[in-house]
Image 1: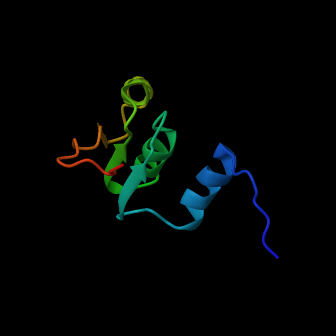
Image 2 (image 1 turned 60 degrees about the vertical axis):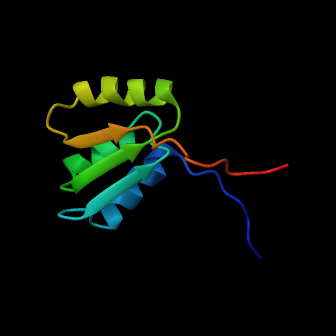
Length: 88
């Protein structure tokens, strides 16, 4: 029997600590505010990248990254699609 559960930021941050990201590459897809990518970097992750298709989210992530100068994170929008994903 499976139940859907909401996962909050504190559970995600705990999960980052539990999986030991030190010296591991970390990709945060749908980074939003960038908090998880920043935390991964501060926990020792290397080549940490945050990607989001929302420009406002990337700007918010840049603002949060500026507040955490010890974090090294690459933030970006995904590359544009060369072909449509769906046809009607």
